Length: 382
Image (cartoon, rainbow, N blue to C red):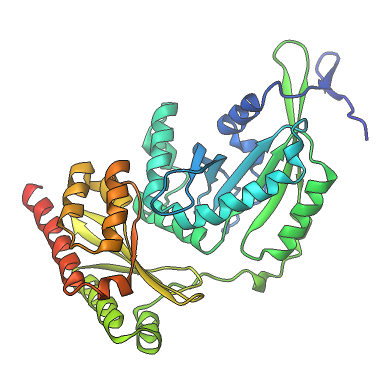
């Protein structure tokens, strides 16, 4: 089908002709400033969807210790805490046909693993500062009665469970991409996949009209409501059941000690991923700070403790994060990852298997003592 003119009727009839975006950067800037062109569908309570920009060129790491290996064009979020990943291509870019699909799946898989809530919150607030928008105004459409920390924890959990949107945006969507989008949308129960064809028309002067066409909605509507898993939070009973049935005695003792300490002195929060996990927030200087996450992966069987240095640095500052790292016991596998964190400014989430902690006598006791010193030091200086 050839492109047709769009007509504006004022005092006379004016034709608007199809016009390509001059550069991909122009296209990306348009979406960042006017995400309303991507607002289709509604929130869980029926309110209209309103996407809010988290970041342009959002870095995507491929391990907990590395910096960004890839860059997603745009990351948005809505008031339900559902992240929306956007890749933008002009029709003249041949990668719009197949290569962009592999890119997007790479971003989604690694973002789900390596975009913790504190990183997303920091990226969002830095974007607001760069755009000259106050945080109060920016958060107005997102929070409801939640705190920012609670909201970004929800976003992190959505990512971990695969509850997200993937949007391929172009000025023309080729049939090959449309077919792939509809196939993925039928097969992926937690994730919705769309192609958005955004056609630009220009008239006299600065007059522009943007016409979005959405592909993939039929496949989304065909998904069985029961097929979308309701996220269930891991409970302490769930964790204890895995500890009893799968872990060796010493890793089991370490996991139980961590969970008992968190229950007594912090706030445990169950994850919503498909494997059992729990995170803990401790009160430090009057605020709730995420400190660690214990994950009991199902396949292959693997148990590990991840230390939330990105959150600690975000909430307490680089000096306090560095002091906490120095106070941790010497565990060779953890020490190697901490060395990387020193070089990168303590912005990651280094993890250590429970078996590695079990190999070092007193390791878990040393970790708990370091957490206590972190809490006491901040309280003393608050």
